[in-house]
Length: 433
Image (cartoon, rainbow, N blue to C red; front, side, top):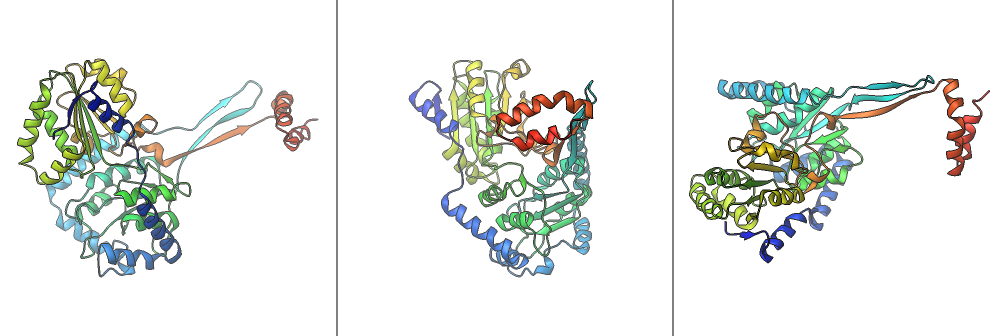
């Protein structure tokens, strides 16, 4: 970790410019590979799924093995311990309680002339939940199951389909299966990467097509979601995970370094940035990074991420730091400052905001309750966390009485004629007495 600059220096401005413009699409090779995979799945269905799964995940996969069987589910429960089930129950309760507040109601407006307008809120019929394999199944991303599946359940989605890549022996980590069953998901398939997204979008002999596809994944998953968007709804096109920490003189370098490393251990592309108003803090953070790296299971991965994407900037004031944070629009924004609540109103753009020294980003990943599927690459300027609304659609309701139509007729016809749509105008005229 060596990139330390002041925000006003030429190096600092260049670093900030790179942050402001970090949104990027997949490269041409990735786009082409994904297009070919999607076309194969659309044309050949299960045969394509099995071919790609054999090539990249489980060499002996057969089509009949794609769905998780009741026997596999029963075995999964035998393989997890009571402590896991207790933690799972707590996480489910927290996430479900938070997302219950996101439910939307249909509504109507009745006007004095008797016309009625409104909005009908309904869930989609089906949703596909992509769950990454996690190092060949050895690090099961249980939180992804919960964060994607629970909001869909609360929205009222009747059919929730989970897809996840199998391990080399064709199995799925039992913790993932138990987590899915505990939130009511029973339709689970062994398929990963872009071919799983294709199956969810187009349908195959084994996997029925869905209306919404959500969930994180690698660049092939993200690109596949981008290419099928429009035929189905997607939650977002996610980039590398990122954290921005605003720190003042009250910040503990131990905590700041720990949270940078928590982000850096995701992958080599992860972004960990600090903006501090205390010029004495950066060297103390760097010292802590070096010390704490020695204790990590993914130390080399984290070290590479910090070397390539780590950054510490020294700002002149908290208002400057916060305005820069708004321009960066990070996925995770931590306010490790003396009085974070007094500055919350100034934050306009962030996927999730973590207030105070006792609030690590990891709490939001697992147990706090809000969703951890968040906009990245600066898209927090216009995008939101995954939530219940991701699985809802709204239909407009319009009802006129004869008197109400007569009252509005001249205005409707005037606008229709202005647009050259005489049949529109006539459809009103023919209803008038």
